[in-house]
Length: 225
View 1: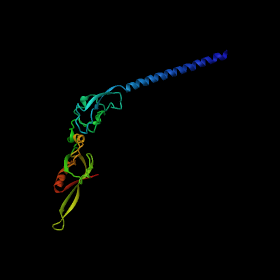
View 2: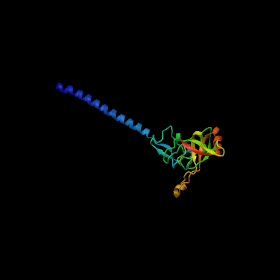
View 3: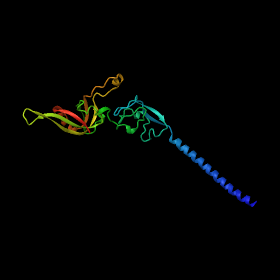
View 4: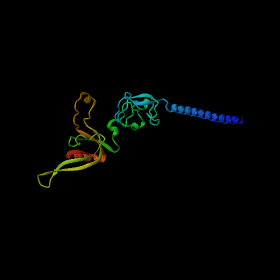
């Protein structure tokens, strides 16, 4: 009889301990579930309805409001929750269709759309004539960095003869755009895009006269870096 009365208290203690542990696990699970529910709360986010090009003005036709529970889709510090806060701003980079429009994707307020908004401080956008031989076989694209070379004929030491010289007049300048880019009508009709005839460069202001002078005296060639 004594042996039985000694075992029962031990069993009760063990049972109570297991019960408390089970309750603690349940409480923790409920707390985690509640925390998870809070993290997945529904928020409003501005999203692109169509592809938005870099330095394009955002319009009411190009964006929409959607609701999402995915915090990774649009982090709180990057989120734009009201469509009027996006309309009229200029994109700083391409924004693909159905992607959220985040604050980091927008240019500073007051930035002008198109090429005007892309000109770096202290620079000017200058167009130069190009052809296949002077633009690396039309492989140079907007955003590329190039050296500008002028090829010209000069009087040789021998009277009546000329010699051809090439001189690098600008280094490490960025290509802003290439003339005669393909457009939607060209792609839809299946027509072949015409070769580009000009390239626009971002040139430091003090160097602009040098570039114009070189263009009048010889042929401009762009060499990719």
